[in-house]
Image 1 (cartoon, one colour):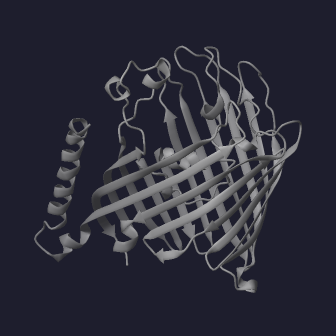
Image 2 (cartoon, one colour; image 1 turned 180 degrees about the vertical axis):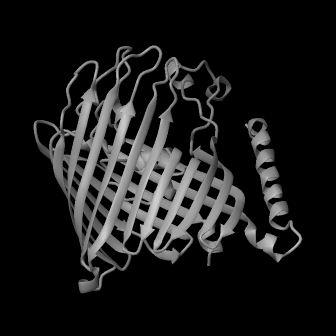
Image 3 (tube, one colour; image 1 turned 30 degrees about the horizontal axis):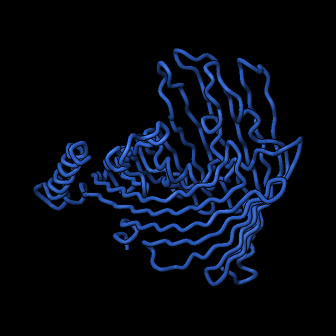
Length: 393
């Protein structure tokens, strides 16, 4: 494994050395002020034990692994209102227990189903990106392009958009992101290019957006949305369209109660979907969602209640070569696949999230799912360490 990683490690160390050299180069204070070295290190451990009512699409399993994301780069300060950043790094992830099984270890020839369980390289991706940071009056503007961490998209999206497992496994975005911050408001628009057109690989991309603003001390309004395009390859014809919009109003009651968190959000999920080749017409799954959360003494209770129609109508559909749409078309929780014309999905989370430090987050949670009855539960433990949060203090 290390012989495959060694060229990338050498490249990473070379970039680090170059950044150090550049940051201290120059003949005077002015040059030293304009050029500076950037570095960051993220570590994440995630344990997610899922005990579900087994179906062909949703099975009980345990997700357990860790990720390390070192980054180095260069910051160029053009003026007091304009700054440029160039960053390169690694996304290293190890799923615990995913070790290669050999015939020698088994003591006999391996069955076919076991021989297919081959671990992927711990080097998931190389990240490289450019960022422009600018300030215009009271507006902070950021433009990022390249391969960059998903966490840089700061919008809040329901699990109808992105599931817990997707956020953990698909840690990076490939494309571009625009962010606008003002006092009491935030907006972002991004593009994640997921698939390049190929012989078998279908062209896929998503344009996503989130925005929210403070209307009053106790009232926020906002939205989340995406447009996902699942297009053709050389060997597979047909295009799938998947649009999802979630406007909402949120009542923030922390100020009047003195609790760490107390809020109620009323939202609407509206989707437009079309299998252009096999259906030829749009369907409009939709429903209302109420989210309530209360937290004090670092102990929280969060409930998300959805009532509406099946938000994943094409999940079990297949393309012309028999590939199931499934998670290639949908990225949110499978529980939003409602049985019947209308139904209820309820997700109840109880969690403990102590404040240990600004650079370390620990969360212990239990999620219980109801979808036409009890559908299963999760026991989760996550740990996140961010070096940059420590360096900025």
